Image (tube, rainbow, N blue to C red; front, side, top):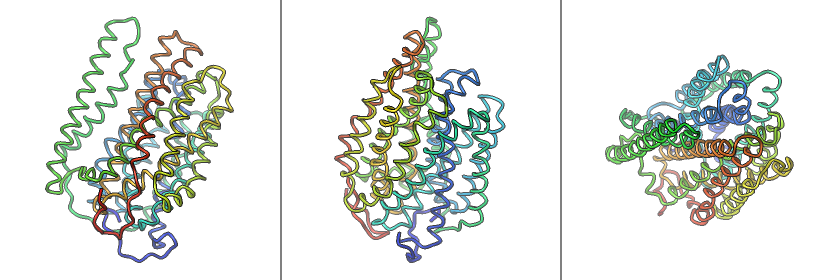
Length: 493
């Protein structure tokens, strides 16, 4: 499948219900996703180092992550069009070419501004790759095997978070931050060349239109919201003019975001009547899809903000090295990957609640623990809690991805994948912007130093913990879609 979400007619030839050729395509897409995630997770550890090396503030530095996620949020809605209009091979080559170009620019970047531009280019490629992977899996894997496949996906996708921070720590201490991208670049180029040679087209394309006003409204809406959130606390200080300017910028940005999103939704509801929407919102007619996406959004907002805060806390408050920071998240990522196959089999057999309920409780409980950290919190205890939280996330992400997309008709898979990716990235970007800015503001108000840094960290984690509480309620409402033949009518919601 490349474009339409139309089921593939070739008969299954492996235990997973897909042909050998289809299985090879999935693993190539997983390899590309691994490279993109490896790149993203290396930055979490590198940000405190870049703050010192480039002479920038924590609020400015978080844009290296937020700009990446925001770009994905702006580009991902367009992937619904791309997956309809272009072939699997064309979309893959475009995505990996953009990512490789961005990685090269980052490797050669002379300073902060060029590095941010490079991250935007990288994100443009990543944004295309992830919906392509998810749509392909949903199209060619039989419903009764999807949880198991998603479990296998989690192994690969957990290896990158496991390797990324540790690799980043080693590189930062020995080679410098440029080589974080220098090491990723050849891997990306190999994935590009192998994929261009091996990937064949799965399915048919159609002459789907692209609506430029929708692209503009999407950028204004998501960009305005996240930029506005990043301004929270930006006017902190004794200068009343600076505080006033920051407040005006915050309000104006949020207003642009809300209005832009409102107009975007209005335009999509009109265009989808003629099947020409950039992002077909009829996917939200499925109650199960809507609940799953909402749960994923709340989890992403708390989680992405938290995993950005933790490296900052470890290096600025506990004064750990980048390598030690990377090693701190290694056990959790490995545990998440090893749990993936088991979680996938449990989902296929027992459904969602047996996974989502404990997953939500574990994730929320871990975030509440982080509200108690200080300057003397044992390093080993932090590693243990981080590992437990990652297991909680593993219990949540596999059933949420599978149940959300499995609740849709096959013709809506590409749009559903785009919605899932958009919500995840926007919520994550908002969480990072809000929590990092809050941490910086509280720390500055407390006068600076280690104790002030700990106070800022606790305040930010408190917000993340509060955000996570609705996850426990939502976990009881989401269910596994009934297995159905490909191409059948959607289940009742």
